Image (cartoon, rainbow, N blue to C red; front, side):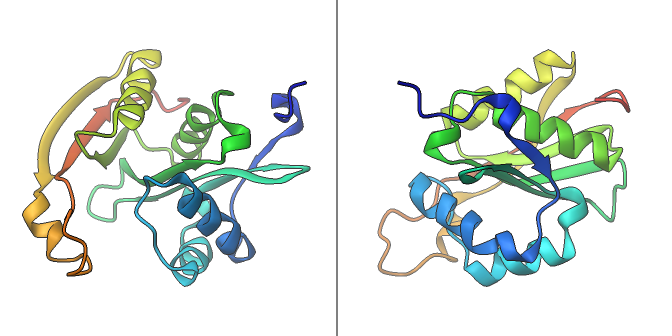
Length: 174
């Protein structure tokens, strides 16, 4: 028996501050995403709902993407986090959410950062680029040494380097 929701039973919509706690739970349950406070997601969805998305289903939220249009480069949408709950995996929801955010933002470029070990995210973004015949470059990074200074001193693992991915150009109807 398949307990995953049918793809036609889900709705992509802009988030509301009330979605903050459910998104926080998806992040915690992922075991791989950087965990921010519930307040950070509530605030994000209050201020950046127009450039973010959630996937809603009768069972609750199945996924989210947080992002914003870069004020210094209005043709660039920056993707901060992508998360899909266990029940929503394997349905292409991450790709659908990214495409939704790109279309609503009107951006022709997408930027995000990904650690070297995050093969799932690398595959997701490379797949999105292929699907839209867009290029991928890596014009910079936030070194792990910089990010390690931001984590709890008791966390001996530190933080991997976050490599910048710049993808595009996308057609305006991406």
